[in-house]
Image (cartoon, rainbow, N blue to C red):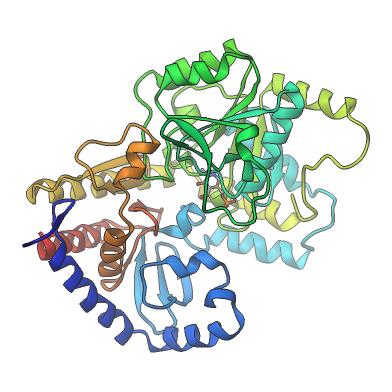
Length: 453
Ligand SMILES: Cc1ncc(COP(=O)(O)O)c(C=O)c1O
């Protein structure tokens, strides 16, 4: 009897997978050799353990990446729709950033003192995002960690609230899930020795009643959230959700921290600006320096006052906020060039048009094959999901994730010179992505579905 999974003939999919693995191996002898060598001195054979979780039979090694494409060490070329999972959302190695980095490197990289660029960058961030004060970090993970500390320090409250299925980097506090309606520490965490549920509450996205219930004892310092969830597959806010959620946070004295690390795909000022939201703090990372490690977080006028007061009133000494290389001159030069010349209105206009083309193309294939799948979009970020009805919250989104299925599709696309984001089905377009690139992706997606339907 034939097994069907998400509308796909699973037996055919497994046969196809075996053939795709052979095809991948045959065309990548150099990557295979490097992978074998890497096993000797890299834990799990990779620089970071989850690089072992891609869909490929062995690690794919990159020779160079430029604009919307990259080349592997065997000379195979790819159009990149993963774009470093947002780190290269404005293209690989943008020329203005590469130039600024080279010039700055010759003039010094890090001093523990600011360069002039710090003033320019903070002024530009305030103009774009509408928050008047800014601080820096090396990664969005760190920026979230620091924002959380400021929020707890400013409010004198200990509790954090997050949405079920969230991801805000490897900041410990957020790894609490709702299991049968109860908060449970994520079991996969390594080396976690204290009970995260003591200080972290969790509710479903789009559930205002649960949100109010979690806030109403007045003990929650902040709600840390993405305006649209993007890490468990995409989950969009329902109309009016954020306006009401924001009002609830205000009523109960809880600060709202918007993590726009991924939703910066919405436009120049992020989802927050596009939808007129007024968070107390905002976090941005990954693409801010064109791929050079750096992140930023902003404070409202009121929050800045409270944060400064908390610091002044604290005992002198370590605050637990910041790292030595944070706000180094190289990162600042990269950010300045990126904000001035790369993350522009023009770039967004191009990306939006292509994302529309991509989403429409994928929807047409899904409709033609009558698949029970859907396509979700947040500006330049598009995702296909294995459900006919878009998920409303983290539990619904989690229930439709299927890593076996994703692996087969991702490998099929990779063998046709197309890379998409691992761990779910997200696709990004950048200023150098072309109409032809998108058409190629849609055609290959159609070929895949035709082969297994
Ligand atoms: C919404 C969000 N915030 C923060 C992070 C952490 O970014 P980084 O891994 O660069 O620290 C991620 C990473 O995927 C993210 O998706």
